[in-house]
Image 1 (tube, helix red, strand yellow):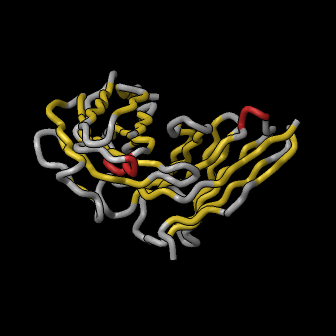
Image 2 (image 1 turned 120 degrees about the horizontal axis):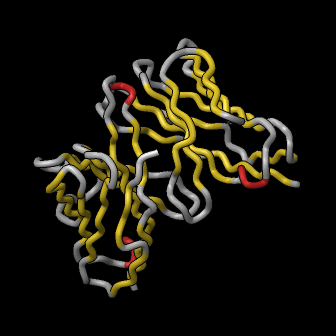
Length: 111
Length: 119
């Protein structure tokens, strides 16, 4: 079992729709969770961080965390073509400072 | 967000030469930086953790004598790829850890990456 697993994708949604990205993790002791966006040929850019169970909203982005289910998700409302990118879920477990990344989900928002 | 720079952004070198990549945190001090490598259509692979003033911690399978890491100050870490070969061609990305009052709310910010091509 991979330590951090994301829905395989690619995911394609129409402009204006909600895009839902999912991630599960295996280390039950994990405390910090991050979503990064990576455009083709560029380095990852931090979108959201979440540390407590529940929802965290920032603009069009909502991160959801359920530690009991070892599940973290990212919702993108009113998706725009500029949201088309690879989204990386990252988890910081018990190893101090290190992030473990999922394989990424490619999102395409079509006009 | 915080700003992390990398230099150079792109380098082409001949097989057998060494290449140094610099990673700087521009607006915060980073006691810890990380070096990743990413091959096309793959996710990030952590190579090593760079700690200011001490030896780097390498991930399993990463040759420490080939990938030399130096973290001489709180804002600068360098990765030197020694005797580079074509299979070392990749996208090398550093990140710097920004700490806050709460230790588990630390965040990593990535540099823009360095694309290395070894001929």
